Length: 250
Image (cartoon, rainbow, N blue to C red):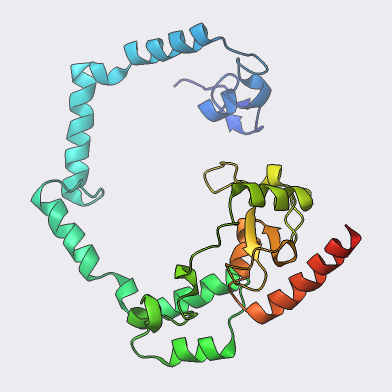
C-alpha cells in the first residue's frame, strides 16, 4: 500500500495530495500565475496561439474518437440535447413563433408597464385608461397616423421655415454655450448607443416649425428632446421663462 503525502494548497489552504496546489485554478490564480505582472509582446502572443493550435489534443485520432463516443452516449441517454440541423431546426423555429408569449395581449401589457416603470416615464391618466381598457391593445398601440394615441394633428409632417438651416442651428448652439438647456450636458459629452458623437438638437418652444425667432428656439440633447413630446403646454411655459431671461441679459 502506498501512503500518499497530504499537503496544503498554497492558494486556498485546502488539503491535497498534490505537492503545491489542489487544482489548475489555484495554480494559475493571482501571484502564483507565471504571467503575473508580465506583459506579452505581439510576437509572444502569436507564438502562444500557434502552440495551442499545434498541441491541440483533438488532432490525435484516438482522443477524437473517445470524445465522439462519449458525446454519442450522452445524446442517447438524454444527458445532452443534440444540435438541431436541417428540417428539425426549421420545425423548432416554427414552433417558437407559434408559441411566442408576446402574442398574448395580457403579457404585452405587463411588459410595457415594467418598461415604463424602469424608464421612469409617467403616462397621463387618459392615455393609461385608453391603453389598458382596450381589448385590441397590441393592434391599436402600434397603429400610425390618426389611430395612434399620441396623434397631434399631423404636426410631424409640417415643413420647417427657410431660415431654419445649419447656420441658424450653430448660432443657437453657440448662444447656449453648446450645452443642453435641460440637463446642462456639454455637446462633447453626448454619445449615441453605438458610442458616436452627435450635435445638440434644436427645439421649437411653441412647437411651431415656422417660428424661427431666437426666443423660440433652444438647444437640447436627444433624451431631453424626446421628453418634450409629452405635456407640451408645461414645456412651453418652462422654456419661455428660461429663454426669455437669457435674451434679456444679452
